[in-house]
Image (cartoon, rainbow, N blue to C red; front, top):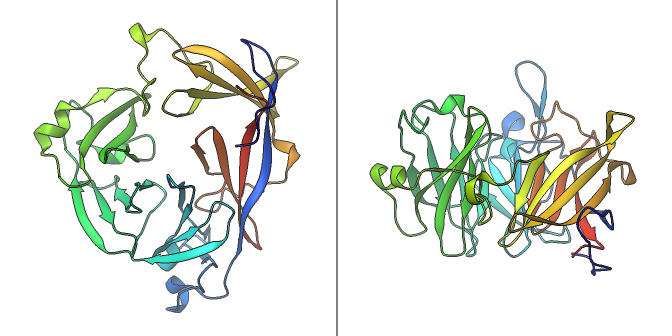
Amino acid sequence: MLPLLGICADNTLQGTYVPKIILTAPWDEKNLSDNGEASKPGLFGLSKNAEGIPIGPTAFKVAPNGDIYVSDIINNRVQRFSPSGSFLAVIPNVRAGYYAGLTIDNEGNIYTGNFRTANPYVKKFDSKGNLVATYPIVKDEEMGTDKPYRWGAQGNILVDDSGRIFIQYEKDYTYYRFQIGTKDALFSLTQQKATWKEGYFGITANLPNGSRTYSGYLLGMDTDAEYEIEQEMKNGEPNRDISIIKKYQKGKLVCTYTLNWKQIYCPLLTSFSMGGYQVFDKGNLYVFCSDKEGIKIIKWSPSGGK
């Protein structure tokens, strides 16, 4: 996060988000899917499906220590980079598809899953790519998890600081979450159902009596703050070049930031598996971009905020 330049008061526009390209990596000429030979470490595979649509990386996540993990599904692996974008390691045998979810715990273990199957699950891998555990997910009509193929959003996975593992998903335009276990134990289906509740990840997710209605899209949460993103209105129409990010603490608006997407060029090629994909972490917004040369990740950081 950039140095704090001021304090935002309610309903003021004193903060801005500042972009920086932190990771660039080219496509390799070969990949495991098409050539039987994995792309070189630090490079990424690019293939085409039966319809000729290009398929590249499918998920990325920022770990608690700031390292960036990118799913290179064409090469059946995940690649790890430093917070500044330097290549660190290849983690083999970990497949994190677009709907799979991807997260990393404090010990460097990787969690991914399959939520579009009759028997959904989460898998835990160690930092070397060895499968450690498989967590079955409860199938329940009341929860809506008996029809996982209808889940309206990615099966987001969260592992908190104490090692509890949660799933968050969308059903009928409402978000739900429940715990499937801990880093050392699998929850029974009865235990999972007992933790099921409406709401987002984050301690400020469920405000008393539903006291706040979101005017935009809930961007993400930290332990003590909640962030919302919406488009700026211009002449009664959404201005797609400018976004407004609002920061709340305990349900109270404490800062409003502007984000000018035109400050930096980011090709959003939706034909790629992860075109335009975003990750929110600790007040920062990470955006995945790709073009014919390769991939890049842009980090947008708040400046002038509280």
